[in-house]
Image (cartoon, rainbow, N blue to C red; front, side, top):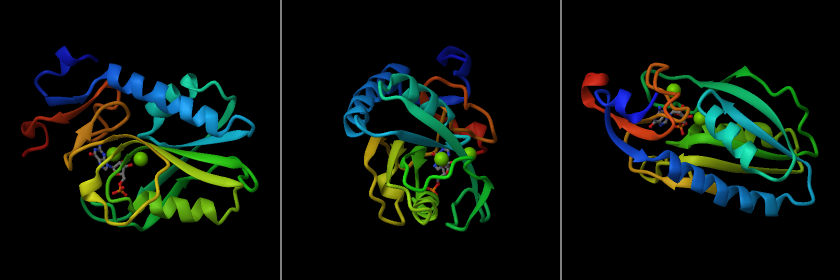
Length: 184
Ligand code: 5GP
Ligand code: MG
Ligand code: MG
């Protein structure tokens, strides 16, 4: 799907494919340097992080292993509650492993905060975070994120893995939806 096909649904392209590619190249170089002499396990949080995991993994020079987790946040509506349920756990025992969590977006931070304490309790050798997007104005808990792609305004975004009602994940860029799509 491209920007032309999306015209009616999209309000605004916030981050282009070219900007994402450039940011991943820049970040991959830093991650390569950090893990030069270590075995790195990257953990993607399904489903939103699928695109950023796939592209980051191909941009890194460091050999990595990849694993996935799926979590769901309890709570009504679109707000994250911080009470998280594991839908799919890691296949990997991460004790003594160098783990990098790869996230699509940090909104309130509640999901990631839970994930950090859950994975942290499994005693990895190190546990760091890369998120493609972050909404600083939406933060409810302070989180120490090691690498952030883009800080964005407190708006609902879709594309590049992010959905609205499971749609728009396959857009190659990040954009905002026109209000008529979500009944606004
Ligand atoms: P948090 O626990 O940080 O509030 O929520 C994180 C999760 O909420 C993300 O992994 C994502 O699934 C969802 N989310 C938060 N903000 C957005 C957004 O702007 N667009 C989309 N599509 N999902 C979002
Ligand atoms: Mg996510
Ligand atoms: Mg979603």
